[in-house]
Every structure is written in C-alpha cells, then in structure tokens.
Length: 109
Image (cartoon, rainbow, N blue to C red; front, side, top):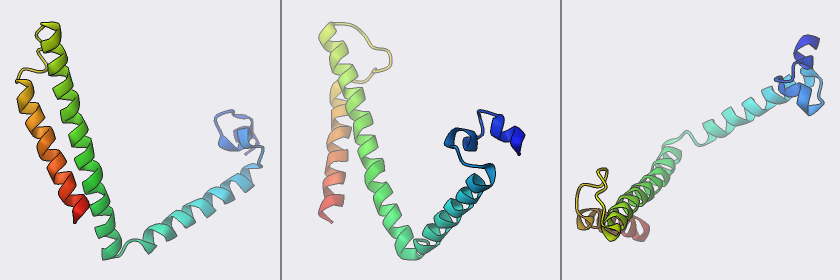
C-alpha cells in the first residue's frame, strides 16, 4: 500500500488521504450511486430518462443539420464546392425545420 501512495497516479497520493481512508470513501461513493440508481429504476424513472434523452437527441440532431446547412451556405457564398456538403442548402434547411417542429411538439406535450 505504501508503494501505491508514493505513486503519483494513485488518487490517494494527491488527495493527502491515507490509502485506507481513500478506499473507504470510494466504497461510500459507489454505494450512494447504486442507491440512487435503484431509487430511479422503476418504470417512472425509466420513462423520465427516456423523455429527457428524446429531447437531448432531437436538439443534437437539430444542431447537426444546422451545422451542415451553414457549411453549404458558406461554401456557396465563397463560390467554392464543399464535397462534404453535396446537396443544396434547402435540403438541409428542410431537416432543420422538421426537427424544430418535432421539438415544439415535444415541448408543448
């Protein structure tokens, strides 16, 4: 154990705790995590997490399409061809509009 404490990679060496107290703290943390997981493990907890992830995924998709739309419009404005943005800007803007409509429905629901 003393060898581990001298090793700079061991978290107890940087925290100033003894190795035993550091490991006890880690055990407490892991038991708190498992308790919090089991508390939200019911169907309601799963449904709440799925609802949250649906919003996050939709926002991520929206931002991805906005990024591609910007690439294409910037390439068009510069008069150059961007091989990664082959389709016209309107195609991407249509996806942005659809994602916004979906997000609006989720928020209103």
